[in-house]
Length: 133
Image 1: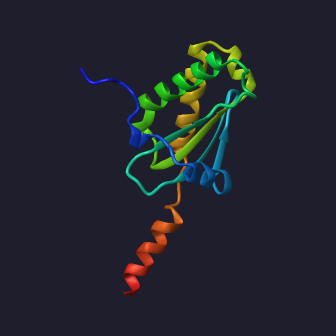
Image 2: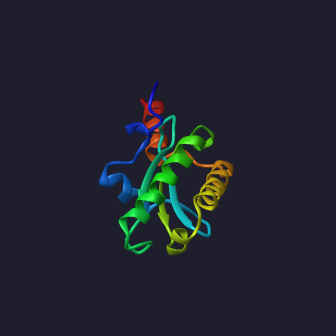
Image 3: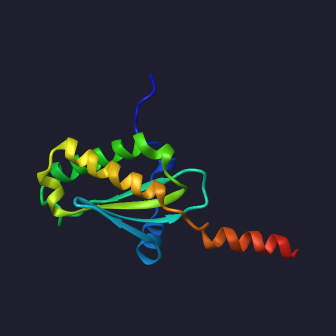
């Protein structure tokens, strides 16, 4: 039986990917989570998590938030556009139950799925240069 984890190609792992989302990206927020997104030019969405000690000083609580976000993303990823996204937790997220947190995360995914995105600038520039030659 295949494990139900999140494959490496669906995760943001490079510091440059996180930095790019900090400088030029769209934003969505909810009661528990805040996310930043930008088109990635791939055929799938990629998830990055930034759960800081500001959300909770206890590692066990931060890890619970990350586990729930990864699971929610894994279930919903086929309905998302091709974006890189980073999710950050607000401090009130720690006090909610797992069911409430999953509902909050899924509401964000639904909002993100409805957004009409422009293709990444690098992909558009590449297409223009091909047409000129």
